[in-house]
Length: 256
Image 1 (cartoon, rainbow, N blue to C red):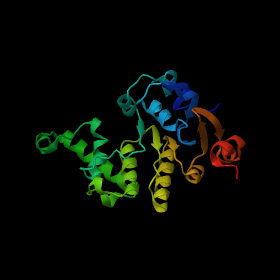
Image 2: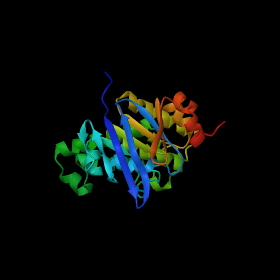
Image 3: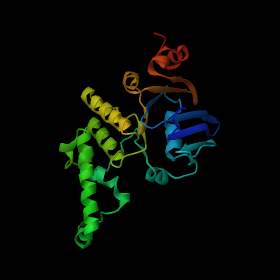
Image 4: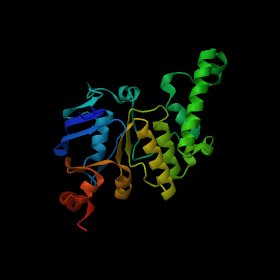
């Protein structure tokens, strides 16, 4: 019997006026799996991410998290229950340090409040604050950007900023991680670092869904690949199966 899905979408449909952005899309993610989502521009990848993360409600279909229907749940509720997401466009707090950007992602657990709050805080609250900062420092080290903790996030080059976004997304260990073009703007060594972090997250049981235009990167990292075209699932399988699929090669990868 196969392991149940941590995150499952079934029959998802989205319209923008008269345009069908998604048509009956189904997708499932299991714990410890890295799944790639590819397709040409306009295929519906980001729209599907918006539906999965709660930014947009589908016109039809449903989303399950650990078997619970979350179709109408907010992004905040989903985040509190273990779902994290990055975006195509950078979403860092540029005037904060790298370390504080990661600290913000843990703020919902409590603590914070500035110097006055620290002076008046109970020992338990100060302990929680210290633990959050230590956790943030470990995550930055795991992402290869520990030395940048005191740097302002707004002054980072694109590749490093992407790694900060990843660190922020995993500051609290996620159950599900949605990565929207995380390798965009990264150098080859940074991409290797990114792949290593994603693999380690999967080993720890996180389910990862990755959208990326670098097909070679996706094929080398993902055990399973789903191809979207014109808002529908065109193909699904291992990297080798998807690469060999004639419909995929015609629609996206090219005939050669």
